[in-house]
Length: 182
Image 1 (cartoon, rainbow, N blue to C red):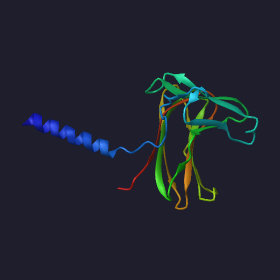
Image 2 (image 1 turned 90 degrees about the horizontal axis):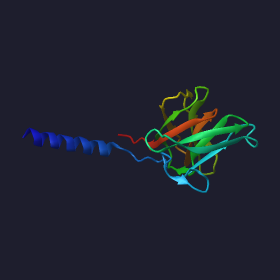
Image 3 (image 1 turned 120 degrees about the vertical axis):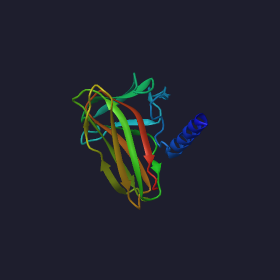
Image 4 (image 1 turned 45 degrees about the vertical axis):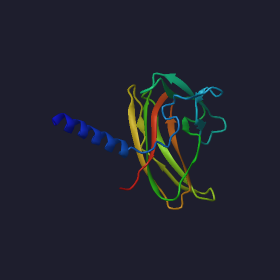
């Protein structure tokens, strides 16, 4: 009888845990799928955003030794501003107000800081929300950042950005989830 109760309880807990999970909206969150033509993680982009963006140069390389898989994404900065953004290639469509959670793991030189931004637009492509997480200093061990943000009622599209001030940081295990009201 105890064995049957233990198995039943384990089944109930597993079912509850599986049901509580939400969909990860980030494609290729562990950077394991490679775009062979670009030699970088598939479904991701990189750019330099700042006053010297036209002359800035940055790249993303695949680095072995990911936190959970074979690869991590290594953001490299070569010249111009050190404000490098790395983001999923597809803008997400949403219908108005919502709450989202972005989490990611990172490590790198302790001279580098990272943070995240959430950016929304309305149907006329006019900017609605532009929010930022706190900056975190990298270290040689993996750290996690979790950033929750709210979108406005007139928001129709959004994107998220992993931002880097410096060179050589590794990102892995990105998760973007909509937080559903209970």
